[in-house]
Amino acid sequence: MLRIDAMRAVYPQLERCVVVTIMGAVAAELQTIGHRPNFFYLQHAMGLASSLGLGIALSRPELKVVVFDGDASILMNLGGLTTLARYKPKNLVHVVFDNESLLSVGGFPSATSTGSDIAGIAAAAGVPRTTTVGTIDAFDVAFNEALHADELSTIVAKVKAQGPAKFVTDLSLLENRFQFKRWLCDDTSAKV
Ligand SMILES: Cc1ncc(C[n+]2csc(CCOP(=O)(O)OP(=O)(O)O)c2C)c(N)n1
Image (cartoon, rainbow, N blue to C red; front, side, top):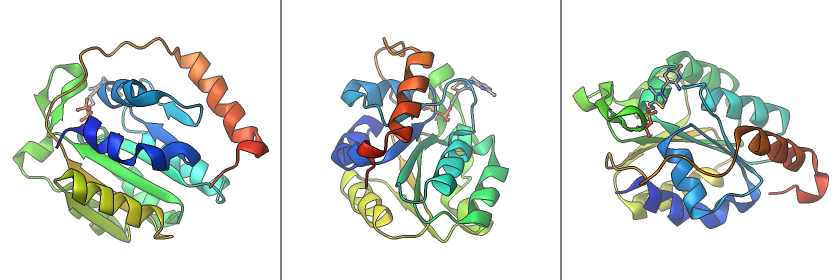
């Protein structure tokens, strides 16, 4: 499965969610599909997309929050999984695109390439719903179930280590930051 195809499959459901992504390939691919003001691409702070998503989910329980994470990113912040599990926000869907690689910085193998199981780690941390999927259809089903489950979910989507042709987009970090904050604060666009 290609990550861009997985995101394309669930893109219509993202319209009324808060979406937080990691930097690099995921952010560039989602912008290729189509940027929306409710999407925030967390630059530089590798590993912390799920922590940012947790903060938004707890402070805005009326919104659905979707985090698009990466395997190497979440492996840098395993304590983030225990904190997610501690607070168990019912409105958070945590997707980890596992390409067994640090693709955005050259494609070095990550620890999942030698068997580390992120869904297993999340379950052991206490995340109530976890699954690993390897096809677009299975991802689509798992994502929609998680979105309507009313329970914290971590979905690990095994994807090929293939990224976008280019990583630079014309959306600046500050523009994204202010647009996203306006969307969050604008009651008329809220939401689910
Ligand atoms: C704290 C920190 N360390 C390193 C980097 C550089 N960096 C940016 S993306 C990335 C790899 C991310 O890997 P993964 O989460 O697996 O996503 P992929 O690139 O494979 O889509 C690294 C090491 C960073 N931005 N921040």
